[in-house]
Amino acid sequence: MRTFTDLSWRLVIGLLALGGLVLTTACTGTPANSTYSGYGVGRTAYVTYGTIVSMRNVVVQGGDSGVGTIGGAALGGVAGSFIGGNSFRGNLLGAVGGALLGGLVGNTAESELSKGNAVEFIIRQDDGQTISVVQTNENNFRPGQRVAIIRGDRTRLAPIYG
Image (cartoon, rainbow, N blue to C red):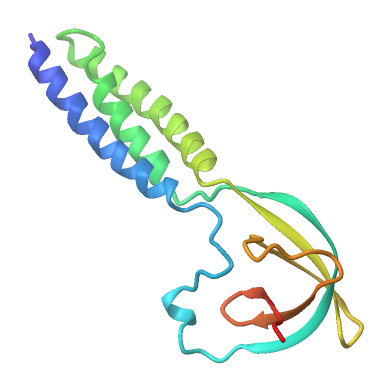
């Protein structure tokens, strides 16, 4: 018969592993406009200019890297394996059921934790074309403002000073 100590130890390890995965996932929300990937540093970007015509708040859907699903399934499988007492079949069925349920919960948690808020900007470029750019608004842009449209590793808006 398993002791409470064995159960506690396995659950603590599982919770720590899942906690690490959740913290990693929680840090992957909507990146700030001023955040560049290592790939974008030192690369040439194409710049055009335009005027913000309108803007609206949008929600950026969370990513699905699979980390939440795998972490939840692992933790659910470990926890579920304790269901069924001393029966191998009962433990196996509990582990499978726990893994399925844990995977579903982990996937949902990852999606919710990685959601973010952003703004969709409608910009009329100087050449007359109208484009849409979705990004964060840490520069407090407003309709009618002139902006630089930077097309590099991703499209960004930057304020024009002077």
